[in-house]
Length: 380
Image 1: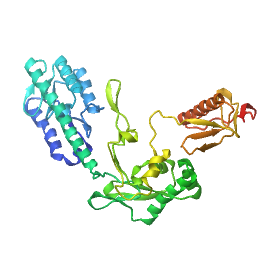
Image 2 (image 1 turned 90 degrees about the vertical axis):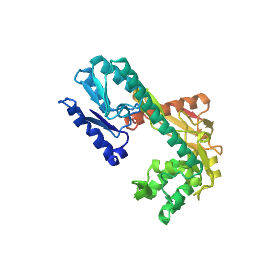
Image 3 (image 1 turned 90 degrees about the horizontal axis):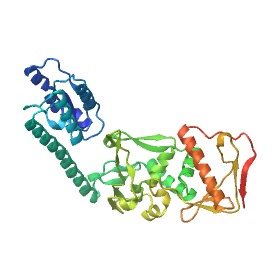
Image 4 (image 1 turned 180 degrees about the horizontal axis):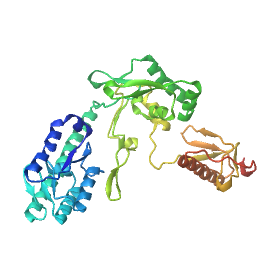
């Protein structure tokens, strides 16, 4: 007996649906079945093709020949996509298992029953697709008015009619203002983080659901500063559709990957002057540090004179950087000082990128050099 509800909210609140599905045990006993196993591992999991341990457990039991009949309240509880549904029908027809719902008994080996079950599966799949399309259209329509406010970032609160208003807490607003002022002074998100860390200034972080969220003060973190700098809400803009969820196939199964950031011109909705901002939109729009990086994007580099780069010899072909300097140009392009030729700078960038990749993958710092003798020295 397979039992499923699509979301954790349904599991918590739609208790009558749970009781109705568990009541199929009585129907199974009334039909003469004695050895009944209830599979409820998929409670709170969508049936639209994502990983479902309960459904896979059912298929394994069918393959082992341990199942004589599969009970479910309706077809949509078993699967919401054609691939899972027809896989189940094929397995049942091979081992001779029946499909039983609250109304009838079906034998997938019979042509008429197989046709009816196929129509039920198609109807179930199109039903959930229609639900999603209508719900998404309603969300986009509300977002186009700037009225869809699910969660506001730190420094803002929901006002009357779900309007976005600045937090009345002066400590919170002054800290957010300080982040933008220090960025205008230092010109780097990382330097802003270092400054807050050195000054031992705590940053506010929102915890808990939006309705009862709590502001917690904690030590500065780079991600906290970065999230403030990249959020257009702080520029007084309302944005919807800044990210998208990408599906991929993994071992023949559909997997949901984490959201991918979209380019600004691909945002679904962008409303300027929607509420009071901490900075002007022109400042946010023109400074590339506020832009969300695109996947696979690399910042271009330029060579500049009057500086040196030291790259010492390290065993096992690992190279470390002894001395380097960077600066930001007015057009937002990072500039590496040092190197008489573009080839030397390209070699340095490749080496530096390899060192960073190694340190990130291993979780350790690159090994320290055992010799102070430089492999080469590029200076102007």
